[in-house]
Length: 113
Image 1 (cartoon, rainbow, N blue to C red):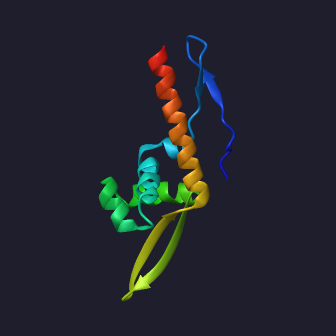
Image 2 (image 1 turned 120 degrees about the vertical axis):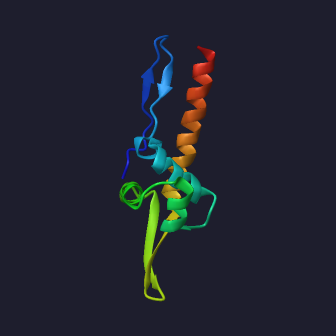
Image 3 (image 1 turned 180 degrees about the horizontal axis):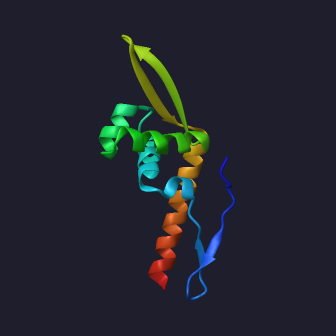
């Protein structure tokens, strides 16, 4: 499970900058988490279409989020066709909220400098 403690780095002016959650910060993973935050669940095909990415790329990033317990995956068959469905977990929602707060803080600090 990812470290939930807040880490800070310093700007050239000595202001502390929040260190962002690296698990979420990558573009595809942030897209997955964001899409799931506003939908109860999404299929692999839905996410692939929304994020305009390949099967392999989506699969790798979804697995990282699943290993971090940020998303849950369920697999089933529908008319003999394998289906994969994803949903955001409670810890994933908390991680996204914290990430957004850190981004807002980073923006605030940047504008003040």
